[in-house]
Image (cartoon, rainbow, N blue to C red; front, side, top):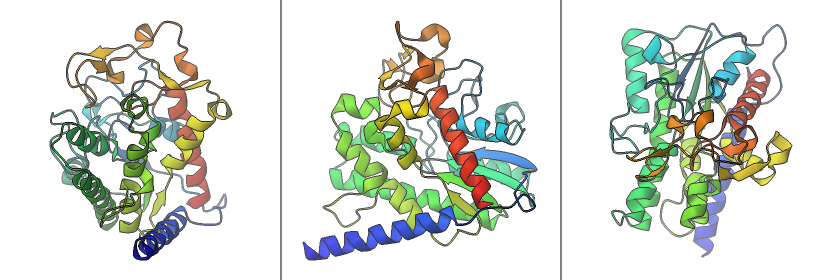
Length: 328
């Protein structure tokens, strides 16, 4: 027991140090503040700007409804999906390196997204890279566990490895010349309507950001990510989505919301959808015409069982922008 808690203590200290290093300290001045020449996005459904058919993983109401778009807007810039000629490569259901996506399909992984960019372009000295990932990996691994294809230890080890893989992709971006990177991991997925419905709140929070207490690799996705990129602080700002969304779901009124439990949409997908199973709500199909009766989606945190509504996205985009301005 002493050895376990000692190891846990070292891990906690290492992750705290990593987060502090990557968050940086002090503030930028008006003269030195970064003004990006371009803004790029890689990742999963949290940052998807409509890569397939213009559909985003939120309520598709035509507003600024994805956090990377909100952040870009604060700079007076726009960012659009790569599918329509833009620099938003993120795609719903995409995993970090696995070519089989969360729904069993073939959404281009984060690694493949970066491949596509580097095959055609290079990073400029003032390019800003926004990157998010891990949600689809946690969904896919959790589904495999629930279906009996993984043991608990295998589940945790696979999520740990996904976090390391994410860190490796960030380091790859730095080595390719990206000087300014904003990275976010997974939110505390134990707060998601899916976890609550399954009764798996504790396990999914452990997979996301809290680690575990009983195996040889107790790192959550975010812990594994932070340990991997601990030396990248000169170029990488880590925005703690788990902390932000934990606060949001705990006290939605502080973020201009009233409900952090209800799923706003009723856009049921007969197919695999967001990877949580057939016949479940898929926010990529959601519009203001497919909102549950009596629900105000503008005041609701979750669009479906995994992904957030427009107001939560905007709030996170503002937080990320504020931290970015303090860091670079």
